[in-house]
Length: 171
Ligand code: FES
Image (cartoon, protein in one colour):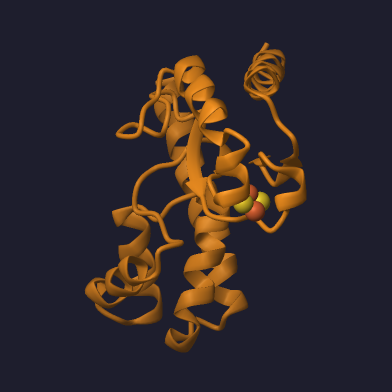
């Protein structure tokens, strides 16, 4: 019962945040891309329900919103973790053994190239091309924080610190 109430409250909070975004853009179809960007910035991905809600709110068919969401590579239709780890695999980082970081993180989080989000939705690992900080290669960005000249050990340490902080916050 408690869980159901919390779930319902979470849904209400989500819709309130989406309504704010829609208001900010005046429910305008012309602003569909920024609307979806803002929604994804809050929820990390665009769920089917969210796509339908946005479509209904701005008065277009869900297929139109879905079409836009699938056209742009930066929109995700899959749930992502609370913490996003972006590993650069551009040339400079690749030469400096970025794959070592990737393998260490895959092992630590029990992930792989086919499964990039942990089952508890805590972490998502993304590989990206040049982050524009080649002098710091290999580069990893965790929740927008840049870690340069990163080693596999340091990458795992960062994950452990986040896990410890999450645990402490949930006590
Ligand atoms: S190649 Fe990794 S930051 Fe440029």
